[in-house]
Image (tube, rainbow, N blue to C red; front, top):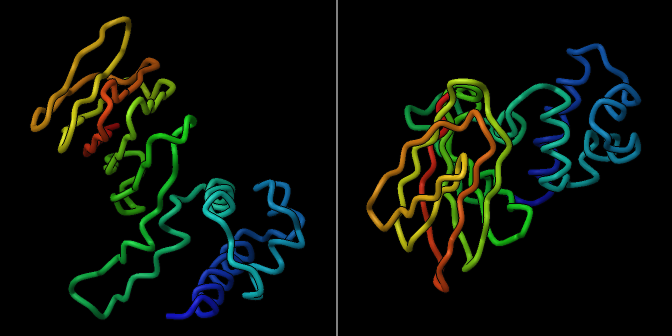
Length: 186
């Protein structure tokens, strides 16, 4: 698929969502913080939105980001999501890459991520909903989890389970990269 085909793919989808909500371009611009002119270009396939723009649009529509960028082929028994379409973001310090692996319909119930930490990388999070928990499995390296003044070290192959209805952080304290899978249960 060419870049032009990808642009055309997401543009009509966004336009359809906007119209089904009864919104004008100005309404969506206010709700998302994306300029009216950029929205118009995206809808017409003249601009390819950045991940930050797609994230803002998903938030405005109250959807999961994958609902905007993944168009499953319902004629297949196995829906494939190419690595290039896996939503990805970075931590505030830029040293942790977060890849969203869960489908859009699981948001708010169960989400899973692949985390890649550079040495010294930190993923700090605000409190999630009451009763939420995380399950962190270290695949490579060493990570620490800090919550409520408690700091635990998780080594390769180990899984830490902890409540996250308070602020918490995951950190790579070593001089080597680390990788983990994170499941968040609401």
